[in-house]
Structure formats: structure tokens, C-alpha cells
Image (cartoon, rainbow, N blue to C red; front, side):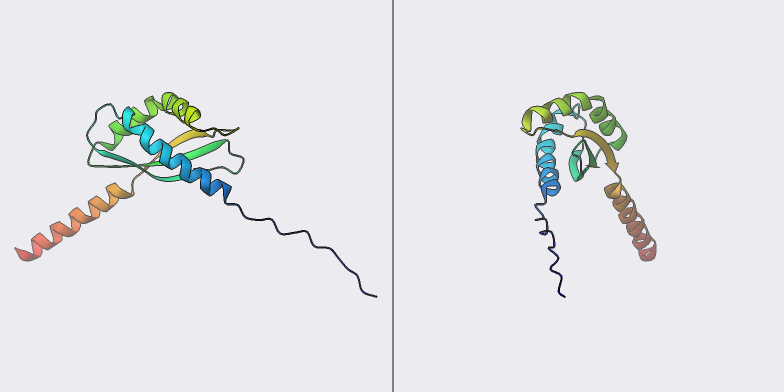
Amino acid sequence: MIYNIAMPAARKNTNRIEKVNSLIQKLLGEIIHGYRDNLAGLVTISKVETSRDMKWTKVWISIVGGDDDKIFASLEKNLYHIQGELNRALTMKIVPRIQLALDTAPRYAQHINELIKKIHEEDEA
């Protein structure tokens, strides 16, 4: 006796979360430049992670050439306004709430470069 068991069709992977992450990264990249309070430094969004239920998104901010703490504090102070601009820019049913996180990789890389440069200067002397 042969049993014919119907397998459910494989779900097509639409990469919806990845598309939303990319869109949020692009939009927030343009929005945040107005909220740096004229502080020196380059601010970029290095990564965006949106939850599967689309309620939250974690935005990793990378700051180069400025005071990380002051710029990050300025962005967090204006988070309500940044969220409002994102809500107006996106035409989705659910717009995720933003959580900011500081990406310290550039600061660490700069520190390592300074250490390497210092070692080379000591070797030459």
C-alpha cells in the first residue's frame, strides 16, 4: 500500500525584513543629519535590525571624527522627532519604533591604528 502524503508548498522567501532594513537605513541616513546639533563628525548608519513582527528596529549609529557621546546624546534627545519624520516618510501599515545603538567599531579601529602607528614610530627611533 502506497500513501501519498501531500507536502505543504515551501514558503517563498521574500526577504521582506531585509528590504525594510534597507529602506529604513536609507531614509534615516538622510533624516539624522538635521539632528546632529551642528556638532563636528561624520554620522552614518552602519546596520539596521528590524524585528520579525515589525514593531521595533535597532539602528546602529557609527560616528567618525567627532565626540561620539555628544552626537549620540543629541540624536537620542531628538529621537521623537526622528521617529516622526520616519513615520511620515514610510507608507507602511506598521512603522517600527526606533532604538538607537552606538557602533563602537570605528572608534576601536582608530585606536588600533594609533597603537600600530606608535609601535612603528618606536621601532624607527
